[in-house]
Amino acid sequence: MNKLSLETEGERVVIVRRRFAAPPQDVYRAHTDPELIQQWMLGPPGWSMPVCTNEARPGGKIRYEWSDGKGGGFSLTGELIELDPPHRIVHVERMHLPDPTPDNRIETTFTAEGTGTLMVMRMNLPDAATRKAMLETGMEHGMEASYARLEECLSA
Amino acid sequence: MSELAAPFAISQPAISRHLKVLEDAGLILRRSDGTRRPCRLAPDALTELDAYLSMLRDALETNYSRLDRLLASAQLHKKRKKKEGP
Image (cartoon, rainbow over all chains, first blue to last red; front, side, top):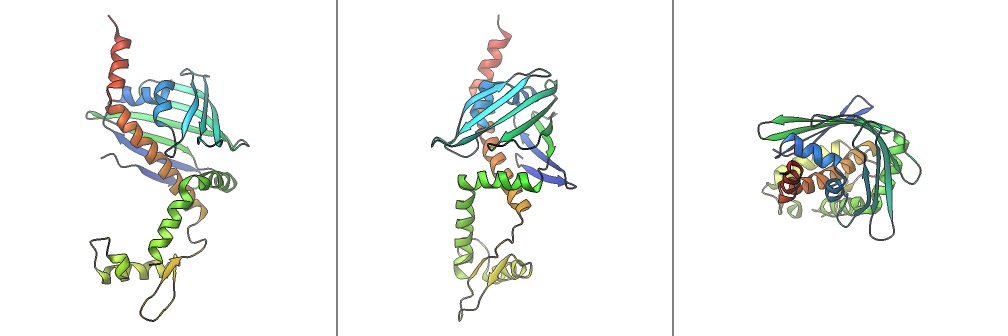
């Protein structure tokens, strides 16, 4: 029931769908309250979020900084555009790798489904150069280990 | 092939069919080595788009699992009670 679904729409859009066993107001709050965001939006195990700013109003600033605990990390900045609690958030963000990636406009909706919530997040599919930069950052942090394990299995 | 089948509840002939599909799609390379046919991932087989989507999926799944636990914890309900107040 909580399975994540990811699909691309054309060549420019990614749509993420995920169900949560909690009402929309809780899931919405977990996406806008910095004290809560800092506890789950952490990336791979071992990472922390030393800086978490989210000014939940139109024009409000977003700033997240992640640390891998070994001197490495990266950050994300953005601005909130529209908020319609607990139904919808529209914001724009970019990652700093350390060079800024192109702006990504993201629309997130929270819809009640029984006692739970369906979250749908619609965002840009980054261009090939941005994907490459993100992969290069990601590769240091566990992806390579996964591919290596997969290759081991297949070479048995 | 027995090494591949062993961890899974799937027969050797079924594994063999799956490997042939992967081989025909150019995703794995196999060579004959007597009765063993070692295979490995073909270089560049996973496009960088697939690799990116896979990385995104992993990152989101890890984060959302944590969010599941947070949503189930007492913490959100305590916060809600504090907001409602006397």
